[in-house]
Image (tube, rainbow, N blue to C red; front, side, top):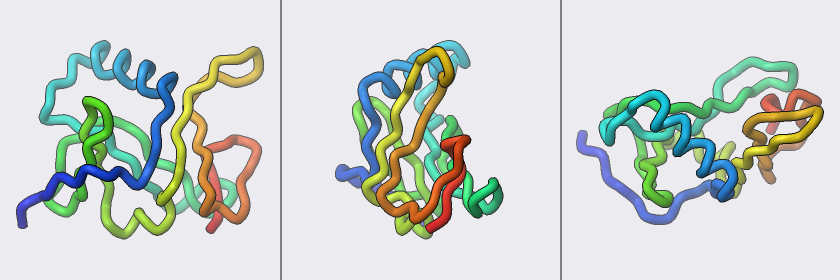
Length: 116
């Protein structure tokens, strides 16, 4: 099976998150064979946790162009992530990526776990 690159990403990434992702990609010396994997996995205090990190393209991935990044996502994860926004915050009490997900029926205080 061949991957198809789609132009309309089901998620949004804020400029502050893009800046941080560029920095991580540069620091890890990653080339264009790596894309930004966005997904979910079972676990966490609310049932699901988010997956966000650089990874090699897999045969089952849907690929979206977002800025200079190839966003990699398993098709089955789209139902949980459609319309989600990934942001980066730096504050006194919180520093890291946060996920604003309209599909989450419940989230927990850690900001990386949700139920749908």
